[in-house]
Image 1 (cartoon, rainbow, N blue to C red):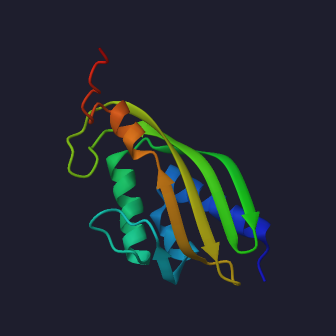
Image 2: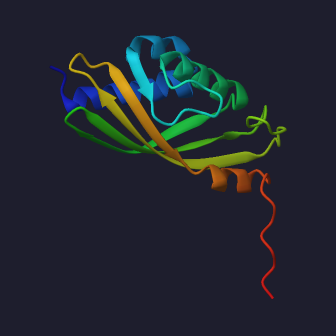
Length: 145
């Protein structure tokens, strides 16, 4: 049986290797075949292949992306992470032209593991509105009179 601390270490390694370093192959090893993505990107599938495609797309859109892990809480088979992603909008968000602007986006992710230490499920909440505002992709709010 894998401990909560070992699951937390796996999450840290997943973030570092896959998202910060672009080692997409590590996701193949860390995600179970029955993996479920509870917050898939629009147009993506909610399975392991969809998650790997999302990681690939994120690295292509923002080659200089970096995830800074702020907090990790591990209990039972769950690991919660609060993090900040920074980068430059080099190749555009889905359906949007690239802005070339830097951004910082807060995130909270929850990972679920099986008894063998494989990641079976993920749910994430991201500050997309704040990110789009930083990139100038939202209209300016009306002036208060």
